Length: 166
View 1: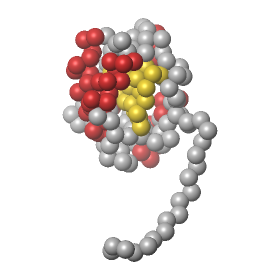
View 2 (view 1 turned 60 degrees about the vertical axis):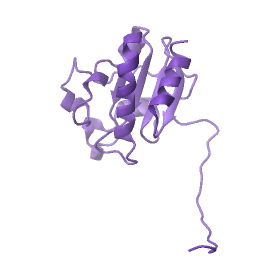
View 3 (view 1 turned 120 degrees about the vertical axis):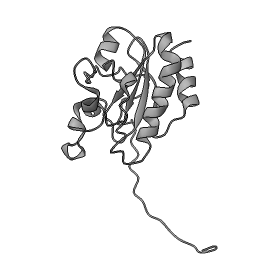
């Protein structure tokens, strides 16, 4: 109804420092599963499986000094309905930039991909309070950009151009 006054009340906990790994920090050397260690169906909840995002672990990308983009999301169990689209964006951008030496990685949220098991160790390593998250990490292992929630192809492409290829 128009012209009706209403009031809302919400407690906001504003932190001085972000909980999740921040821009400028070193990326944790997470040993997320890859197609070399498990089948796609056991690694991802994306259907069909996003196999192009399951080839590399964060740890081996850091060791190889390869820049990468990592999406932390669970397409099948997302609380916000933005996880599947975030993974789709990362996969679409992968097709344009992987030939330029940028790796693309998808890490699920829940232990054994079951929400009842709680979040997995990789989510804890990156201190993620929500999902989805996408991080852009340079060849020295430093987080250069990060996105919480929805992300567009053009936003991610611009971030890669600015932070990894310039």
